[in-house]
Length: 327
Ligand SMILES: [Zn+2]
Image (cartoon, rainbow, N blue to C red; front, side, top):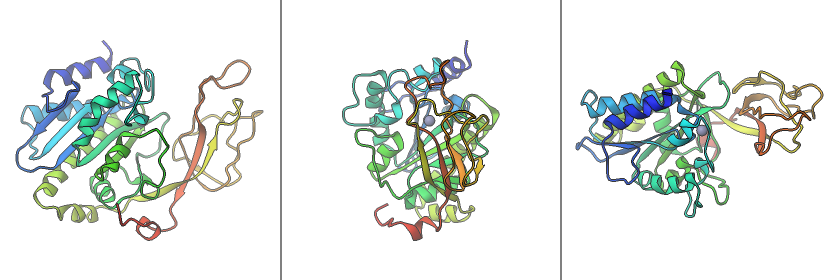
């Protein structure tokens, strides 16, 4: 039995159904306040490192070992892809939270998950990066409430952010974006390198625990949120400065690049004897991609849209940089 199957079996053994049709969720209603948290795991199937923390939180809540006065719904987005150790089976689930998601496994799944996201006041989506990262990080657009929650939970110290929902890719929508479009808080937390590891399990468990504790405080007193945020160190805000599009199938990164690796302007990022990729600015590398390559040196299709990006600290605090009046 795979480790994934083990955690799915444990989840299925204790989960309690809420008012949602999708079976792989657990719903808890503490009856003391109305704040509704939603925690997502394995929206990308092979990012299953949060499963132990999610299952253990569900076990603790359902056995009464963990108190929580509000509502919380945990869902497992794409466990079928987790069992196949794949990001998705037919379509990237985290792109299809749209009106007409299409008739794929993930399209049908998004239709089942949307009622859960519709109920969320605060949504935390737990992800992992393909490659190692020297730190966990949040990644979602800036907004006042999202900033307070992210800082107070302190699931990461870094936040890859951008102006409040400035750009939507037409026809696609991520789970956290779907929640923000409803003017609720939607956060994505990248826990570290994908797969089961103690670091991911620990980071996910800590984030979930703090989320529940904070939600109980906020559910009783809304002003508790800003106080809790200010009690934690400010987040380190970074933004994307450069995306290197994967224009040529022969493009290839040099070995050993990881997330948040510091990079200097002019540094060569490409492997020897491949089309040259040079960093146009200082910063940190994010999402370096190493697709499979064929004997002729070309990437196996479909290749990713971008091969690497560079992020760098914001020049000013987001509050001074962007109009956040609607966020
Ligand atoms: Zn992911």
